Length: 394
Length: 238
Image 1 (tube, helix red, strand yellow):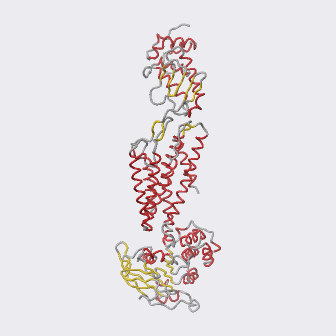
Image 2 (tube, one colour; image 1 turned 180 degrees about the vertical axis):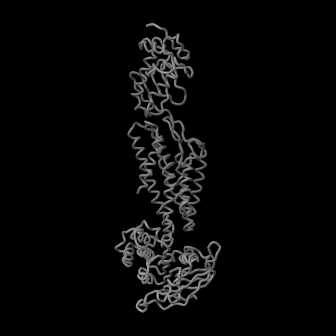
Image 3 (cartoon, chains in turn brown, green; image 1 turned 45 degrees about the horizontal axis):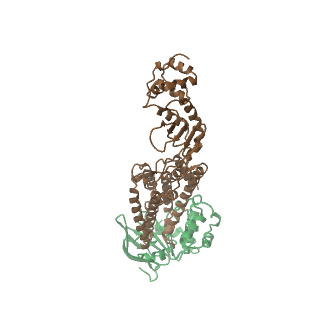
């Protein structure tokens, strides 16, 4: 009775960590749900092993039975898998529900969810059969250690092994998605392995030759799926075709990925003062756009290009800081440049600047500062400002 | 000696464990009625009983139970559906109530739910059927174990030290129940004296050899009114 809510809470916590902060993305949601099995799977396997140990004590009733010797274990597996999968469904519903409540980035891999479910079922089967084959208290500890190691020791992108279920996908950005066919191969791998384990154990109990067929088939499909997963080279994510951005056009034009649309007002609010202060300088801009990929933030021809991957706390300040840092030709640690940077960002001036210059600059009007910046922009951009660049006077 | 209609027939059957003969290859039969098997702890009574229950394979010879060859996989299910086996100790089922425990056994024996109610009534467990086994006294737990063992009306019942840990009053009350569980009952105990008064035949297991003690007359509670342990004390020389 407690297993379902406990597993569901674990799964929700694990899946939540894999989501893009503040952003709804189907790719990210499906990958997060499937990846939650990396935490839930070892727990479910250990619970299944423990259940097998407890059931072992009543084996004499099952063995001396008019029913087939596989009846008991099959019923156990049905119950245990049902519990684990019910928890998985709850996790999926919570994450999907959260995604539905926001404008979500397109892209949905329907096989991602059943692949995660199959991986979870395979964990349960492995734990249960281990408990039946070695009915000792130590077996549960060994199952916990081995399944946890299987999850932890395969970080995303480390090698092709990280793609074996339960897989580690790593962060999936808005412009990326799971590689086509990956979820299908993982689904086949997990189903085939689970089938092989169950068929093998049932054959051991009953010695029915017909069980050798699903056993052989499961092993063969597992091998084929393993070879296919090896071919991905450890990379689960691929770039997706660019999505048409959504824009807000006044007072600035700000364009971002559709999933980031909720951030438009805040971006507009933080970019507008910056754009106003840079007006008339080569760094002036009237449009702010999201960079489609890697590359430094920069301003060119009146368009500011920035990185924006999520709407986590402080995202608008990060964008502004990135823009201002990109105004310089190289990383700049000048105290005088920092003084100007703070003004551009609307933040209090600080740092080891000359207090005289600091007071002088603070005493200027905003209009005076903008005029001054137009004159001294190349020096500022080159990070070569000095006290002489801040003359006394009105 | 193998009787014509022996329930259990062993032909050169030997049982080993960890390299030691628990029962050297021997030929014998166990007929109907109540048969006791006595021997000190560790001599192999439980292993031998498990072998008769087809839970273990003999390392030598052949074993027939109820006319079926225990060495043939095709006949094992026929044997197992006709026998009942109660291992020593019931603490492992402590979290179940009697009703659920017997129903669990009934499911695997393939008998209807009515059989569960029937056996619970027969063994006077109706009042305690909803109580967890761990909360019940030892004699009631034994009755629950017997109910699970016999829910399918077996032809052969194998009981491993069923009376261990019970007081005299409980033993006196349960012996008539044990005798009527099935046409053939095989029960083990550590001491000969625990069996001679009420078993039709007593075997002893010692150093890999099975010995048939002189059988006593059928235990009659009306005739033996001086108490069940009087005969035991005379055998033991007390």
